[in-house]
Length: 207
Image 1 (cartoon, helix red, strand yellow):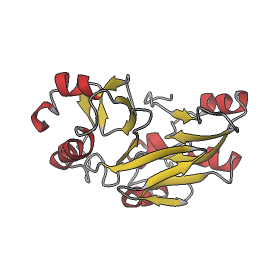
Image 2 (cartoon, helix red, strand yellow):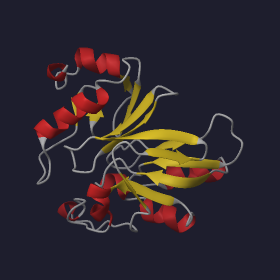
Image 3 (cartoon, one colour):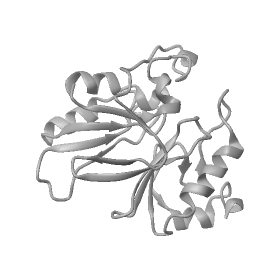
Image 4 (tube, one colour):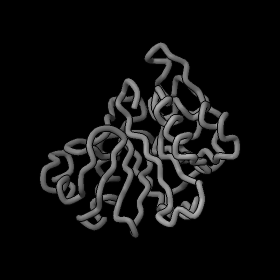
């Protein structure tokens, strides 16, 4: 979605006992997301942010306005980016994008439990200090934000970016997951951990 082709994910329990859902990340233009939620009569109870860059949090304010009870969740190290246009890089692009403050400060090892969905928080700093991935062992999926892409890794050419730390995070948190784990990144196509171990030149050295 949006100018930066962000991937936005809406998660709903397989049992579909209610209309509650979780949203992972937003985009610069969120009309499609809003339309989808309305069409499917879904109510997001939690918004999980993989990190604090503007292209991922631009739609937070609109969602929070429409769904005021929704919990905004982001790692504590990136929480200030919600309200700081310089830190979230929107000011660099001659935009001022801010969002309401976080309701929940995530930390490594935390277990998220909303809408009958359980996800593990994997802290993966490097792209940003508070970058995280969200992992479901039962579904065999991980949402990697801008930590890991199909054939690539997140940019680190920012003031707070750190390539060696990012690679260390990937090695410590992601490469130990089952190889069949499906990867849903913040941009680009889905992939699997097996494929990335085999073909991703950035992480082959970390095995």
